[in-house]
Length: 420
Ligand SMILES: [Zn+2]
Image 1 (tube, helix red, strand yellow):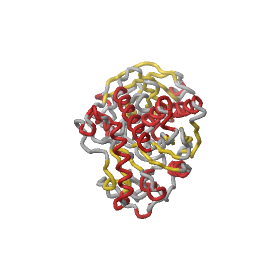
Image 2 (cartoon, rainbow, N blue to C red):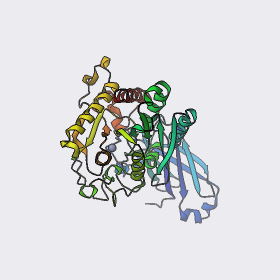
Image 3 (tube, rainbow, N blue to C red):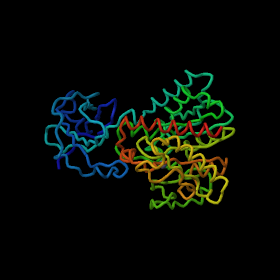
Image 4 (tube, rainbow, N blue to C red):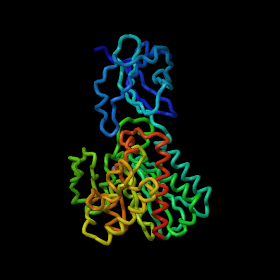
């Protein structure tokens, strides 16, 4: 095999185009040819229609043969500081996954593949957009809305909470505890619309929101990293990192994983609340005087259903279960109104309340809220509603996203209207 001429091939999605960057290898850079400003470069691309978000991981791309790819560029490129090349591919289609390689025209083995998935910024909001929308809400509604930093992510991004309405009694909304899952695209539009159309409700019960806890790793998905991501930048599952019987945690969810295993996708971390994201949530919840409920959004590709999971250990607590069921029922009645058949909608297989049989283990957010505040707290998941099933494979369309934002808005309006 001939030596590869390039290294550090990166492929990212940026404003609806794919940006490739790569460097001359150190041997090439040190050679006479390496001193040339321009060089003949070939770029190869292969469409990967079989790639499945949520099922396939990095290994999917191992060993894909560049010979089956299409050469999409064969021409001169100019190197920055004689070493770094950039190439833009603008001819890409939404929801496709592509693998790329680069080589010179001298018979060297192409470098790659590096893969990218073409995602819509309407479905996966960049961190900058989340911050801008939160800021605008506060600036446009100074009498009703305030924002406060409650912590930071492992990579040092600020985690800002937004508070609207009654600051004494609040419903808390938490997004993207798992980076590849829903949150900001549901929470922020619901809050914006509530402030615009139902300010009256917020005077009874306010909303406190922490829309994108998984901001660090979520940004990788925004930039086209193809595979589902669950852990924070330190490799910890935030929904196993809370200080509630953390030592006794023993995953038994049928995942085949141990949360004590640092290599597992449910790793609980080195100590309770070891992660800055966990501590941010703790600060956020602790500072709410009267906590009516906590909804933490999960499911995939920015869509979340109406399946409400609470702490396993609350199973014997009848009073708590009644309160949880009531809230879940109100939420679902708003999401799926009667004129559409309510929960009897075709494809709606699971119903609203999965209750304490379901899987919020010790160390999870709902378990910690139950243990410390006794407020109804839920991991909210996909509910089996067939029209939103495309989210499970990251095939959510902007139209589906908008319909779904309305459902969650209506669900929350119903919860607050009945809770006051
Ligand atoms: Zn999750």
